[in-house]
Length: 228
Image (tube, one colour):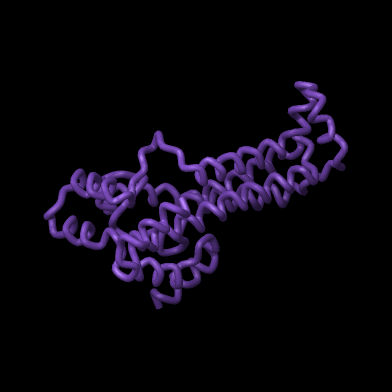
């Protein structure tokens, strides 16, 4: 991904962004969503779903490994695989019910950010697709945080781990697993933002200054101040 971003930076104008012309032609009705999608793919801004970049695969492995660490004691309990016996040596940590409740409540509260986000990408993104856009979307949930879908997914994963903690022997390994999951999401967002800066240029860099990556409380506060 880093190499790909580097090549795109050399090819396209850093200030204007690589898809500005496509967005303008789409808005004027000069290009159909299909044509926008095909041209975006030709320019290197769409990767087939069946294609896996090394960095994307690494993030996926980190996330899966993190979740596996959280449930490792239970895996050993039922499968009795000897190499996992070390997982039972860590002292079990009891998560208070109030903490579990808070995380589940936060996950439920953030979910409304994710649902309209995919609809917006499909409706006004220019390609009639949920996975990629040529129009920078800054409204709805995107006016609160830059990555509403990923934020919702991350919080739900942590909430689920906490929720099942009484049955999976939550321990220091579980904490390490959660940190790995958070790191995987964080690194993924960093790469995505570098990519979006190439796509949208200074427009996206300004957007980054105005809207936080994950801090939805700050995002809501900023939105409230704008509406005054």
